[in-house]
Length: 120
Figure 1 (cartoon, helix red, strand yellow):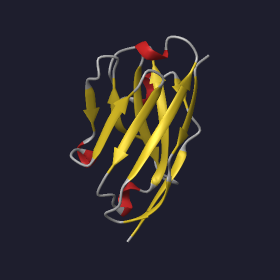
Figure 2 (cartoon, one colour):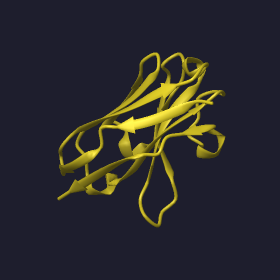
Figure 3 (spheres, one colour):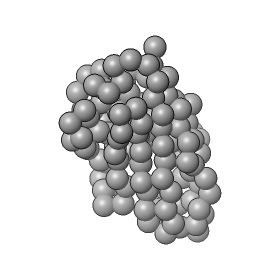
Figure 4 (cartoon, one colour):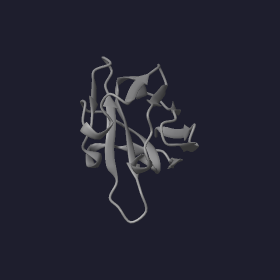
């Protein structure tokens, strides 16, 4: 069983930056695709970005040029710049054994989330 735990969330003003981290424990994590997803109250969980074992990445259009996903051996990061109020959400780290994907239903493991709040 893979366990994921996010950290780094907080409250910032519009235009500010945050860096989220996710620590992964358990075997075979390094070979997984990992991703960041977010969810606001009353809305569906949506993809933000994903990265595979080869460091190939995918981003949703709304964060391209502002967010950067990266990974270490057992950690996942999301550098967020030029934050906007619409970025406010609970951010979740996820992992899967399959290839790079922004489809939330194919991910096998999830963290409990870290809150990001952006005020204007």
